Length: 107
Image (cartoon, rainbow, N blue to C red; front, side, top):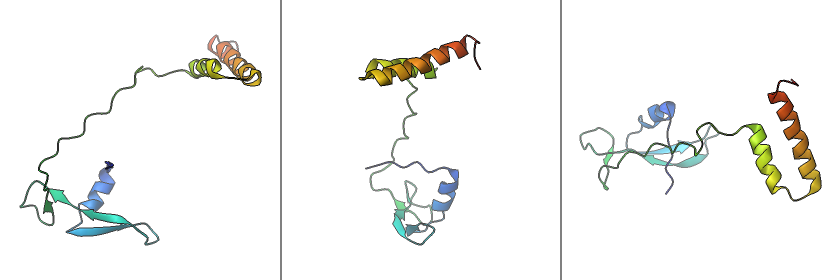
């Protein structure tokens, strides 16, 4: 099963559903069906979730390196993967240009 995350606008639309609802695109083509579920049986227009309360999703994992990578670092990594001299020469050219830019020698 895939979990889809609805933004605030989509949540507002989906919460209008009472019972089973069809979801269609702007041309009227059926995308799928939607049924609101809740752990609160007194909430109007929803079915009680048969599986009981579900835990919230965990927060997304932070990247391994929170600062990310510079374009130069990416090109240097790609250089280790290049298998032909033409690609290596092109990457070296871009790496040299980025080094000069970092040193303030080129804009």
